[in-house]
Amino acid sequence: MATRRQREVLRRLALLYPDAKTALRWSNPFELLVATVLSAQSTDRRVNEVTARLFPKYPDAAAFAALDPAKLAEEIRDVGLFRTKARHLVELARRLVDEHGGSVPADRAALESLPGVGRKTANVVLANAFGEPAIAVDTHVFRVAQRLGLARGRTPEAVERGLMRVVPRRDWAAAHHWLIHHGRRVCHARRPECATCPLLDCCPTGPRLLAAGTAARRDA
Image (tube, rainbow, N blue to C red; front, side, top):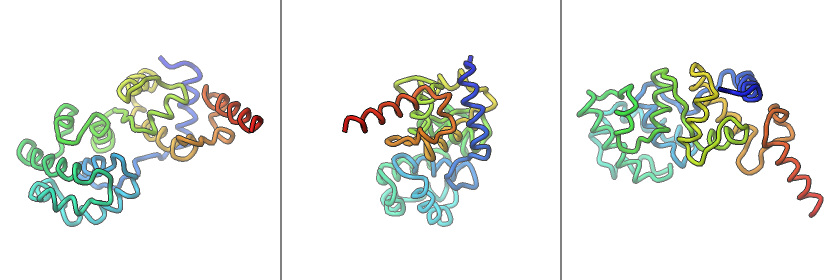
């Protein structure tokens, strides 16, 4: 059950980012799955640059399944961990062809059984490609949810469970994007812009960070 303060935080996030959506570019569930796997330890901008070249050449699971992992690694070398991701994507595509007729399953257990697909990636695909209620906890969501006092936890799974308790189920997918956008635009990891944050008066962390910054400048 959300507190009044938590409900106010969510209300304002919804107003601030009404059209928030994933920055990854995709046109079908398979493209989203590939892009999300590639996005680990890489920026969405870099992933979009890679997939803009990749998807026209290899448009579906069958095309990826026919690739040699070393060849795919060369195609995606601009993203982090490209060799590991290449192996995962080729095996993932082969599994999709062999077990799912080349289609991406709209099922969490089936998704998480695929190479390179963890809970976060499965949640991204379920929420964005299939419209299923799911909250994907990436580094932005993990940080911002805790700073705003929406959820606590040492692991992404713990923060996800906390968010599921306070965010209405109908808003789970949207809340994921609200928190990401706020993390990218305002609540940065190293230098959050607390002084100008529209959530400052209902944020449990911002006033402390501002006070700590003021004290540090005074003592310098």
